Image (cartoon, rainbow, N blue to C red; front, side, top):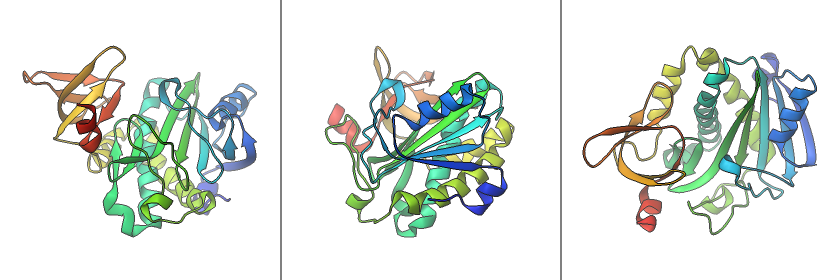
Length: 254
């Protein structure tokens, strides 16, 4: 496991653990102790991995579990934009490593990478003060069964890859996309690139919110990264957080 030279040249460092509770939790703890980053924390296995909205992230050996710690990367209100930055970096790394897979990859709002209509990777961005930790998990040889949104792994779709194989190009792609983002000054470029790779854009989707579900046409994401949904009456609704169902997962939910 090693950093790409371009990531190292940008000041990134790397620490590797055999087993850890959570790479994100470790990143936040290190930041409280004075770590300023950029620091990649990678684990071969997590005993307390977590996803968005408090969900458990199954973390068996053989998948990639990595978090990037950044301090003063931008003002805290811009931290959610890093979900889109990281999603693009993942897309870049995987499509670069496996060109034959590129046409099957897509991004699902707000933070997932899909292959066909199944979740291959997820992102968790957590901020605390001036620190932000970007957690990335990629299913290489394992994926959970019985999830609300279908999941898969690289081996299941015919691609053989180790975490070591993926991490180096991911570190390079992340450095490149962070440069493009420019502390949020060029989020418009990130937004445009993300939309070009989005699953369900212009189509009917369902969004599960905390206390209700909405169905409508996925119009765009706005300048703040919120999903814009056109409802049946033509009204537009901007959504800050929710779970999106598209394609086969939408049909299964109806």
